[in-house]
Length: 564
Ligand code: AMP
Image (cartoon, rainbow, N blue to C red; front, side):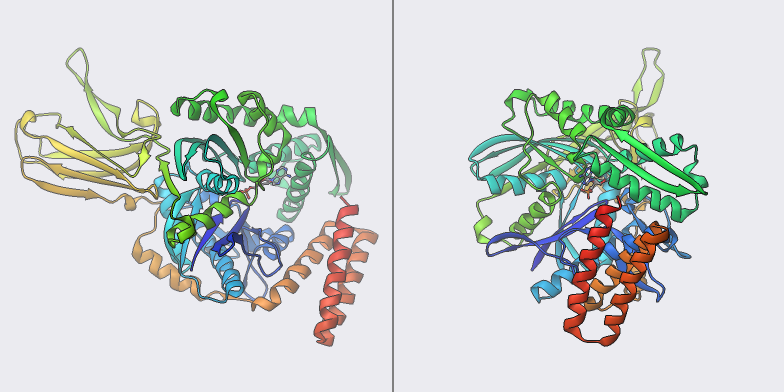
């Protein structure tokens, strides 16, 4: 059984290709959305999802969220006094999803297709693969998120021929893809985006606004208050997607504070972010050589695309209303489940062919001969242009700078600037050359970019026939196989709770969060509810516990609904 996983910045989902088509799998709490948050609780056990998120709201140091942003970097994230890398935390989320899927399907799961933002770099993709390995999974394929969304959409719509644009604004990343479907073939024509733009940036902008109106410095607040404020502002942000204004009231350092926000003010403070959405759309259209009127449909994906300001910008730029009938939170995971079905060679998907593109230009650093005869370095020589259909392999011949040069440094970059200094350096290869005149000493550089978006660089020294391969793994953002093995052992030693306890643990964490967020009568009410529930738990009567749990959930839903 191969599963499809959407490993999102704020939420993750898992699905599979069932006899009735793609299906998402609910977690132990019955939800298909599992918050991408991990925490270690008082019993030193791992919590993932809802319970971890609620625990973090009152005790931020005991866990972490939004770590997808640090994939492909060597950033250490502290939980208690233990430091983890983003791929380890992602592995914990993956493991929780797989445990849910195994319980649901009643079969062990060892293989997965995982979605990644189309604009993820080589290091970020490798980190995602490493996260899969750390979770004990063989990552069969990495699929680009907008491509996955389009796959879900294309199959659902069963259109024979259509060109559409997928606009995917998630928690931390932004991708735009333009695809064409004809006769079961789905071809991605262009993908552009921004790796560091998403719903979390809108949250940050709102937080800064609250703090400036309340004359507070966010970093001066105790961590628990900061987390509480962030969770209220997040709710206000979502409220603004439904109504014209939102309000937050909080007591901080003895002051009763109120913050009101309406749509025009929201539009003003997030305008710089909204403007950043423009360029990738324009670039994708240009690369696909299409005018907006040649698009048949516009599909919005990712939770943050629910903001009316965002959909209005898209509608204005493209001259039509985007489609809304596809669930923006689920589309990528449904597509990943379809891709898992394709990987498993499900016969109903045999007719479906999917082609994707490379999101970046990839090339090497070169020198140019100036008119004065001087050699000037630092220029970018592309080998694979962005939006080339993958898999792609290109070869280019280069010569050393001087006669009798015995060493050649080949530096690999990705990016769109003519100067390598403005692009991202992926790695380098130092080659020995035989001492010969420049013209007799060429090297052939071959770049191969596979369907998973992983680059391989091969260099041949023509005069000697020697070949070298560049593994871009020495990058500090990427774990080596030995490190993965060591960390796999350490992660496997972390204890988890039995699955049947998870719903209870999450419920208690939620009640504790609500208690911490309120004062006076409100918190006493939550405490009473909690005490009554704990009493029933003591009884060990499963039927009574199940009933009491439902009652507590309804009471907390009602409480939360009326207190915000
Ligand atoms: P992801 O889980 O990566 O798709 O992204 C979720 C992002 O969507 C988070 O930043 C959420 O704050 C944001 N989001 C989800 N629902 C809404 C909503 N109703 N209005 C505004 N933003 C939302």
